[in-house]
Image 1 (cartoon, rainbow, N blue to C red):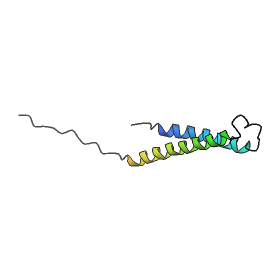
Image 2: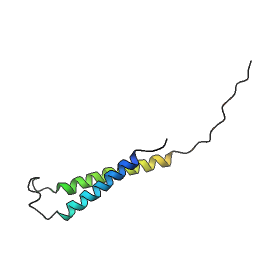
Image 3: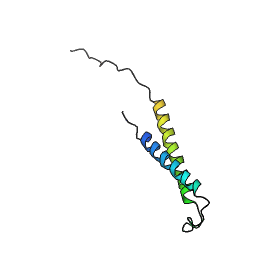
Image 4: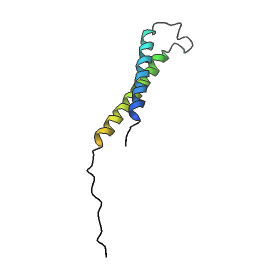
Length: 82
């Protein structure tokens, strides 16, 4: 098999999670910004959720890669003709 889809999914979610977590951390003291979300810093929390999910995908992709071992190709068995 060629491409394990967990690598790009994990990288994408991790990158978005880092960006969103950083934005939420930088704007955490702005109370006017988070009035609509009942004062919850939703950017920070969802960024952390995306970051954890991305790292989980990367971990599963890494574990899946380490468990796959290449096998030597066996020559086809021939049966004697009657």
